Length: 341
Image 1: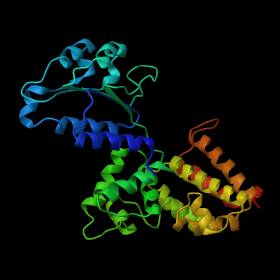
Image 2 (image 1 turned 180 degrees about the vertical axis):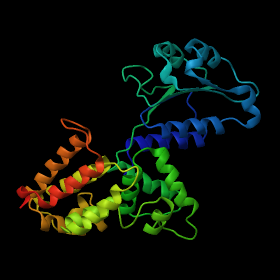
Image 3 (image 1 turned 45 degrees about the vertical axis):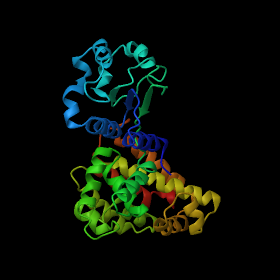
């Protein structure tokens, strides 16, 4: 199910493709990808190349006053149906209320785009609420453990490639939730898909560089099966990477054991019940082993350890230790801590 963020983005793009324009677009929020995509579409597709010469202007907020933008917006287009004015890095403006009067009575033939990248504007302002003459879009970050895998699946599906939930989660965990980086990696799969209709592990390993044998999901499988030797072996390969960070692994660990606790408490053991809780079909075997091999008390203790090592990774109340050593220490406590026995 797409998030409200994705639905709003799709609505804007579909309206633009149908040439349904608002006189003013307010684009703001922490995720720059959607803002860039909307801005680029308006910049490239509203006017023809011939019309752009006299009717399209791109400003940067640091170089212009709001009054000058309003003055430009009140002009009429020359030999075109619209003029397009794009203001980038609008987070540099201090007195946004100076735009209120224009937004209430804009020039219909002007499309004014205000791009506030990396910043959410004050929700109490008129700009922050879509009105009759302006559309306000807040570009929110996608959550890695829920929204991002679904977005990855949709992006690849739109490009003609199927992908399993597990592989979506694998990419999301490896790349993170910077959508520009995610798209860059997904485009590698689309460009090199050849005759394939679905992404497989070999494609991911070849084009994105995620090993099908040494990743966080294989590590969680080893933990679920209490396969100590394999868990430490996988961790050694994972933590050897130059850009290794314990933080995304801890997030996956926490999600894994939290779902295990829910399964224990609700006594859900069948695949159908697990899938109703958001567990992918291919992951159900790992959860079957997890709830068979760990008691509820053990899983709760491990979740406490995960929280403890999250703080340690951030240098809270201790001398900083590198992520590789922290990960090794955490695994040792998961398998050998006395309280777990």
